[in-house]
Image (cartoon, rainbow, N blue to C red; front, side):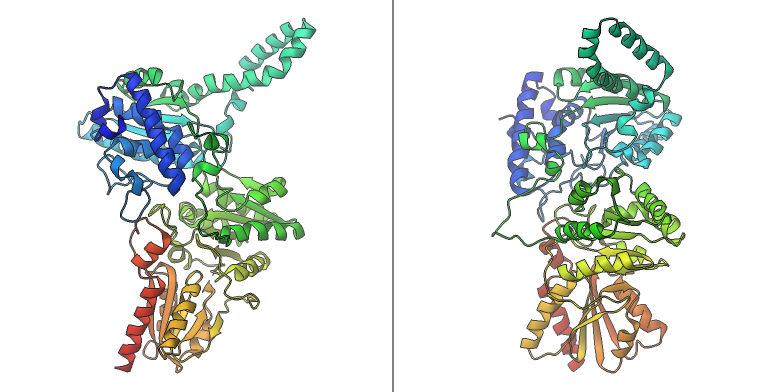
Amino acid sequence: MFLEKINTPQDIKSFSVKDLKILSQEIRAKIIEVISRKGGHLASSLGAVEICMALHYCLDTPKDYIVFDVGHQSYAHKLLTGRSDKFEKIREFNGISGFPYHRESEYDPFTVGHASNAVSLALGVAEANKLMDDPSKAVAVIGDGSLSGGEAFEALNNAGHLQSDILVIFNHNEMSISPSVGALSNYLNKFISLPIYNRFKEGVNTVLKKVPTLYKKVSPRIKKIEEVMKGLVVPGIFFEELGFRYFGPLDGHDLEVLIPTLNNVISLKGPRILHVVTKKGKGYPPAEEDPEIFHSAPTTKKNGNIQESYTDVFEKKIVDLAKRDKKIVCLTAAMCTGTGLTLFRDKFPERFFDVGIAEQHLVSFSGGLSKRGLKPVVCVYSTFLQRALDQVIEDVLLQDLKVTFVLDRAGLVGEDGPTHHGIFDIAYLRNLPGMVILAPKDKKEFEKALEFSLALGDSCFLRIPKHKAPIINDDPENIFLGKAEILKEGEGVALMGLGSMVEKIVKVDLRLRDKGFNPLVINARFVKPLDEEMLISLIGKIKVLFTIEEGVVEGGFGSAVLEFYEKRGLLDKIKVVRIGIPSEFVTFGSREELLDLVGLSEEKIFWKVVEEFKKEKG
């Protein structure tokens, strides 16, 4: 076993190509064995095994920087950089991250998890090297899907202008998460419209038509010829116009070609692109056949649990609503499956838009749809909406347009860690005018909230967690703008939960009542607008109000409540205790482990409330 002997990338530099091929098989076997059992980003990493090996074989890491875009493809990199013995604990609390993580290893110069930024980061390193007269190399590894993001183009353009000493490995596997979308993925459409190409094509057709039987056999393959021309000619033209020297495309799994070519390209100066073609999911037939499903490997359900997630609930409900309202259109940024739009896409393909990894465009595009009277539903992970805050402000809210945003994975997502937690959205959204923020407590209320948002006159942000959708109330009351829900009457102390935290406080309430306490239990529902009438009604009845939210405390929902009372000079009449997530980058682990870590587990909330009860009793 070669893998067991590797502690640093230096250990593979004496390997023959034959040895490296054996090592690649061992790495794939290790990735498949661990990730198919534990879950993780399987298909991307399997496709990039040889790229990772070749880079560490040819470069002098960690002195030379390898910057991965997104980081889905970095498992082989981790196995080659001293983390093989820890790989069994990947994505586990106190284990190793599923992404490159700068606090984990000197071989991970940056923590990454979002797309389209690797060239920018590597370019910064390259220019710093120039200023410090440091000959170290800066290499960015980016996939074709990430090139649909505007930041990647900005960085390529800047690198070409500066003539920076940077190498970009362009990994072309024809998949991002959902199939690559946009003009870039089909750039040859521009090339095949050029006069020189069409004269060539017409000449071929003229010759073939002189032999009808041959033409009949060959003509169906003309399209295939164009696709070949696409891959061989156009990328070079495109990148060289940006100021890069272009090399490729190469078979990204052929080490006998990849290593000597990479060595030659590394020795050159200036901006270079090495274009490699890989197979996503290589070595694992299920992932090869369906790389979208195996982007994040599914794991076996435990204990027969078939409870629906919020995403599952959305997938069914939006189709039901769209059958009745032809103005509903749905949009996503290369996350069709992840945001629950597969069924909608299949049922209403003409009303479904996947813009690729381009969240800024996603939001502005939805504004255009709204302007023409449609009802756009933007389905995006909370963490990725951060990339489009300017467009939310300038292209939707400032224009008085109505868009429904379904913020999936709002709160702690678990194993994907700090780059993917959706914990900041309340804090950066709630101060914006002309919109509503709503966080339903359970499955039934989410279904009603979706109907409510589509009938609303303003843009609405619906927060849903990466969590199974409970049923707290099988027949919830109707939702009215800015109105909270009293779940249980009480006195002295009130527990006001938001969204996913309502399930927690309902359980905490039962434990408190067993101890003789009688708290008022409130489902806040709305972050904006607040239920001001209800908040005023608490004065004189409640001494301590707990706000519990799955978001950062600073600037969050509890802060909104605190500001409400402060503005009216009522803080001497009621104490507001905010419980939420500290303003920090929370690590990775299971969602329940992380909730406990930040003080949002049922147990931690219970004891926090008990302590306040004791303080009030003196």
